[in-house]
Length: 93
Image 1 (spheres, helix red, strand yellow):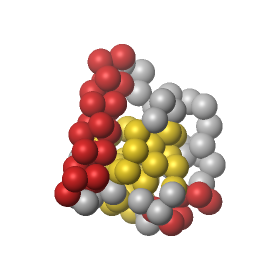
Image 2: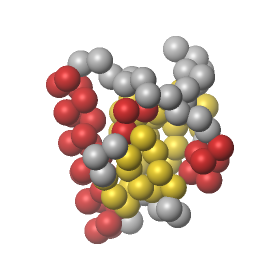
Image 3: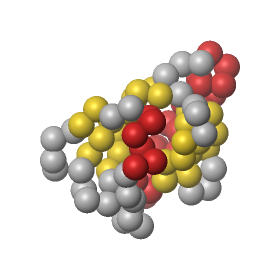
Image 4: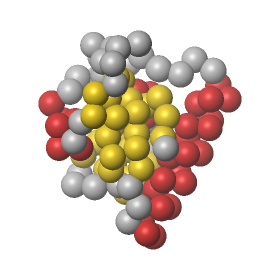
């Protein structure tokens, strides 16, 4: 794994994402989805930020400190109308 790079949410649209699922274990993917829904609740009710670790198409790993506004089937929506594919997310803190 490459060094984890701190990135601002405004830089995410400049990144490229492939179709690769970064988590191979089904239970871990379910846990990721649970964490995303929890972060959505925290973001909408308390405006609480979370740290999301994710991977771009070039396999560079990034972390962003942001508010999750919505969780969809394939993407999450961050504050400011920025979208991040769920399959690229390693974990949410």
